[in-house]
Length: 193
Image 1 (cartoon, rainbow, N blue to C red):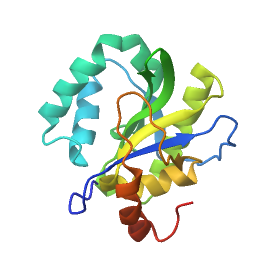
Image 2: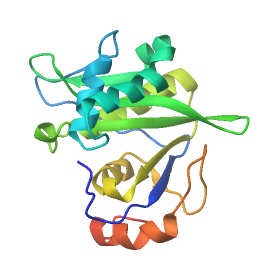
Image 3: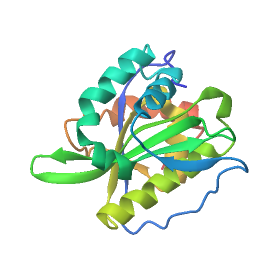
């Protein structure tokens, strides 16, 4: 869940090529699944449930515009975690962004429904996404854009080998490290470098 009670600042993180990948398994009864046609509605519900969008309809419209035109890529890059009944309850996308002529591997739209948070699903989902990106793109730097509102996810990304970038950025994202740092230091209790 996003914590919109704190100030919003952009945070850029990078996982350097060659960083060892820890293995985090899913809890018993949960499994990974890749995108199949029609799962965009599941994605929309998950993302809206954590506050990334106001409604599932808004989320679905975003997905249709940004990702659906690249269905074949989605089948290789959009991961879900399925619960014991086979219902998608978490998602992450191993995608890319362009900075001028350079294409960067990046993580997009990581979310786990509230009732399934705290079970280790997020750690396993991030690790699996990094594995997928490594298989598709090779062992290269992986970037992500996040925000202070997602400080719990930032703590998870730090455990997965990402570092907060002091000034570097990618794509068109603004790096607001100086503004974000005091907030994150307070919330993350000195887990920052």
